[in-house]
Length: 298
Ligand SMILES: Nc1ncnc2c1ncn2[C@@H]1O[C@H](COP(=O)(O)OP(=O)(O)O)[C@@H](O)[C@H]1O
Ligand SMILES: [Mg+2]
Image 1 (cartoon, rainbow, N blue to C red):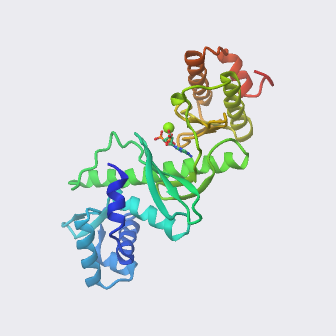
Image 2: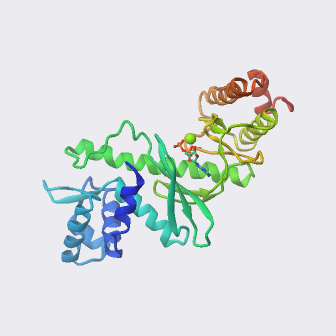
Image 3: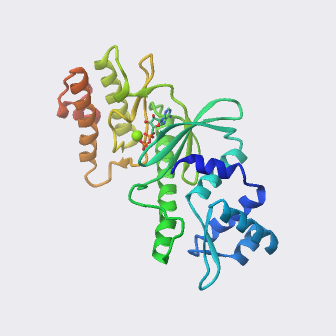
């Protein structure tokens, strides 16, 4: 499922449609399907207007409905995208959405533009998308509960990544600048670079490896955080050799049981990439000692 579907729908929506979607969404915190009188009350719209909007939203395939025991509505993930985008536009963060940078397993990442024409990155979290197949009409209550909890999981993941970036950016660790977070969408600064894995050539691989490890060391010693999915795809490098560590929703803190194992895996991933591709050899325990601060040099 690409964001294109959501953008097509987004362009057809009016203020009243967003009011209805937001009312359904709010209702879903206490109902599997939000009843019509609730939607009318929360949106402040007349019941007739609500019915018209519901028919339109249904045609645009943004909502799911149930007849029994009581008519009710739920939003789907396309509507969730629309609500998140709308909030960014309304709060003056976002002016336009451009090309996809990546449509991955756990997220869709798009280029965006701020009202001041600054390039932005929009990351829509889609946790566990591969295991959760969204069907147009969700039949059972259980499926509907799963659906709600899926939207909720995506929101939690976005909040978590935003939180990590906020902490790390303040410490001047080389990560994207966090700009805004709404629902399952985070807006972060654009870094002009490519993933290490796809980088044709690096002038001085040893010094890039040291740069990465020294950032990981600061993350560990100053923020008590471990990335948890560090590898050659989550480090971007610019043409002048600057680095940026991305993709933080699964980060863990040092008090997490077994956290050191996650750190070992992170470091092992990076070291084996540099060994394989550039024949740069650094001992794992030595690197761990450096990153955890027990030795001051690599
Ligand atoms: N701040 C950014 N600047 C430039 N490109 C980015 C940025 N963040 C993500 N990307 C691009 O999007 C891809 C996916 O982002 P990532 O955060 O790693 O999500 P995923 O969980 O899907 O791997 C990255 O590999 C990179 O190509
Ligand atoms: Mg990634």
